[in-house]
Length: 315
Image 1 (tube, rainbow, N blue to C red):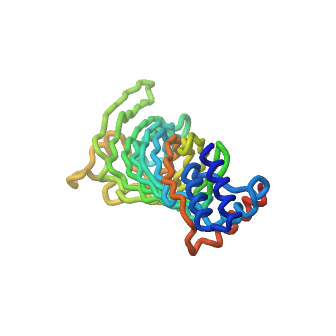
Image 2: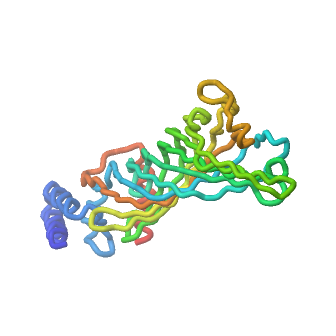
Image 3: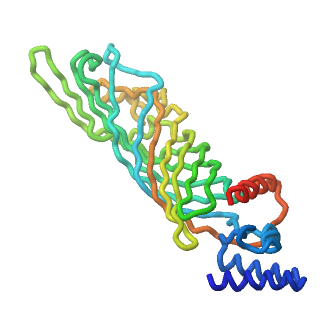
């Protein structure tokens, strides 16, 4: 704070002495001491305020790391069954984890383009609904599927650029690469007319060959950053809406080697055509790469002018 006050006084003194080069050098040193210093005409000398408009310390690139938890929701496109009757199922939420890195390319103080690379473990469970709509009218099936994904979200973000707590929101598109998929803890419950019950359990192996590997989704999210020194901690809530059918139609009834899949008979189960939505909550760390400098002309200057006008009006 003392450096900021000192360089501010030097800037004002050099302007009064008609030495603009030294004034600019002093103001640049002020921004290096406090990259988020914003001159205010109600507080600072007016000539210093107008000089400040020649400079920016907005980071060109802002990297971040993130991690947290997620849950997935399958959305049925077309139901398939070998039982001869329509099946009513319900989804039971399963927790997964995710972590990744990313960066924002800052166009203005408020608007940026973001890209990330995230690894996530996801899972979902499906149970037959109670009542009507069971397998063969009376039987129940419970399945769990666990998947590993690598996601590349691309989005445009709007964020507040002042204050201790700074909210943000974004929307965009993601490429989703399915790395692996496994069936876990499948349970089929036969209920016979005489009241007897028989249960069959199994852990079907990899299902990756039954799934499309490259998928797409829409991305929506938002959260808030908390400023600590020159860095930030942040919390983020994200919804990825799946656009792609995950099921490979040609592999529904067959194993990887082309032979008939015995699970079709054992569990009376084939995969529906479905999309997969994902909801995640993450916390992360942001380290802005500040670069105090004189402003260069940019095709996004009209956005900067709008942002500065709004900031001045707020002040």
